Image 1 (cartoon, rainbow, N blue to C red):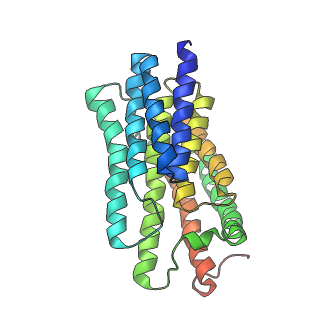
Image 2 (cartoon, rainbow, N blue to C red):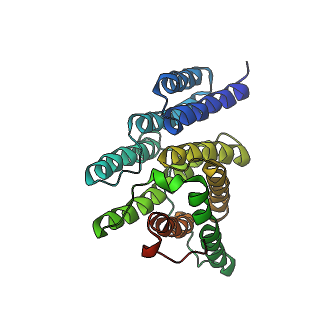
Length: 263
């Protein structure tokens, strides 16, 4: 078996492990697949193996973390620490141990945004406004989030949705895509990160046909990041969508609190 085939096999197994271990939370099947994927790295080029093993470690951290929409203070702290570790470890290895800077958080592209880029943020918000309330009601996925009625709960929901949105870009776009694009063509690297992105959000509550919607969004975010190389821009898009998600969740649980949607 030649090296390119083993690369695709290793990452395919990694994606499968992410789906089963993180997305479906099936520990019994997910962990053996993740270990098999890590073992397969022995049959790959050293540079590829050392880059991918840090992604495996991050996926293992996600597999050990109870990823839910619980907005209690204790769970927010627990998830924050775990997700921070999943992002920090690849960055530390890339910058200070491997010294290849394949994981980097390039915040801005050192230029003003083009008018079409500003327009796209507005379009993304409009699409989210039209799609997310329908999705949540049509699938009942809003029930995966606790009902938020008091001020403290609403604030925690806002912090949680936005915090996870930022983390998604730091991990799946800057870290996973940042590493994979050095070893695969961009279309394959983006495809793989989108699978992992969708798996994580499935466990977080985007059930039903949500993974299809998330997969398309993840592909788009990866492509936009490639074009702009701006973490600020992709985060701005994501947080615009997450603001609509936050309002749609409140509306779905109690329409009187956010009666701004067409549905």
